[in-house]
Length: 121
Image (cartoon, rainbow, N blue to C red; front, side, top):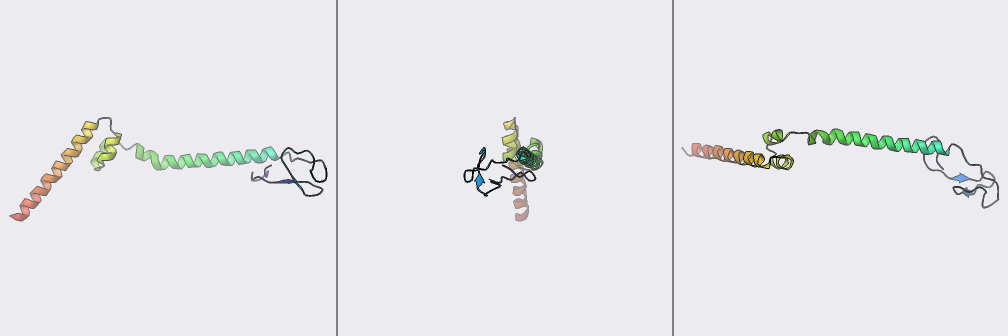
């Protein structure tokens, strides 16, 4: 049984003696009084389902907003940013990423060599 307003589970008690009534029980196990089941039970359950669905939808939207842009970053952008491992993992053309990585490394080595040579003069 669920609360018709918020959907939280709640116990059904005998109107006569207050004994807890189990789901589906037609008579109180203590005093034998006929149990009056709340007809709003389905409404509470539907409310609980609606709340759960809303929370799941919001979680999916938040996940999409956070992670989808990262998934849509083009390989060329990752290469420009120097994120070679991410570019390699995402690329269809793995050789292009390796070539870009090597070219960047050699370019940096050349620049460092020129700086070192310039300082020693």
